[in-house]
Image (cartoon, rainbow, N blue to C red; front, side, top):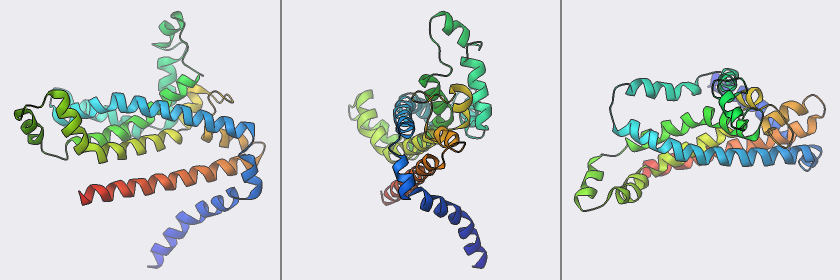
Length: 252
């Protein structure tokens, strides 16, 4: 019991201390500054864009991994999970070497007039690279959580491919898809290392909330405290949402 209390205190004390200072009046006033508002807008716009692309691209991949077995299946499965265990700085370097101005794909894109590095698009790419595996893993679990014979029965009853997808497959997997989407959004919101290396920290363009916190530490602590408190509140909301989705899934 004593060790449990010690561990809980160790985990909670720093968070509560930061939250207490971040909710002070001085820190609260910092939320209205141009730098903080810019970071909020950049984070909101990029994470929503990233989440939309993750849902659009990750759902078919998840279904393929759940329903098909093909040569290289295990390898592809492992590679898609790799960004989850890579250090963020390594992820940023990989993106820079691939999509940077002198990168493998960056040079041809530059000739076509497309520059990705150190732009809002680079923020989105960094977020997708680091956050997509969280959605793919959850969605894959959702597509394997029910018997494929349910889909086969719907097809026997005359349902078309699209009807089976929209009326059977997606509704049955929906709790897992929502859980994965929440996890991916939270991971994208907290992305720091890959974004800093690949997109830089340009105010109003690529400076997200974590980057704004890092930058504020060098000059004014109040914006860093305010943004940190906001991220703690959002993180707690994400955890409550995940608990609710898990409970709903169990009840079903």
